[in-house]
Image (cartoon, rainbow, N blue to C red):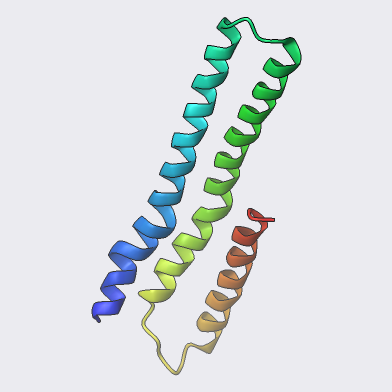
Length: 111
């Protein structure tokens, strides 16, 4: 039960959800601020274009991380708190299928 509480209240919500999203959002905001600063400076046009592209990639990565990572977090929390009963094989199989699909979606983000 201690490990169940650890995974329910700390690991999945904080370590696999809040921490990576916060880090990614912080880096994307810093990149966005950097691009805004570079626009005001006298930099070559190609450099500004490359910096804008990098910022757009970073912001898109944040959106993809949230969209593809959230189902994995939710199904993992549900799976941990699921009461296992020997009569509900269909429910367990469905949860395992959804878990496999959401884990695959999460790993698409890192390819």
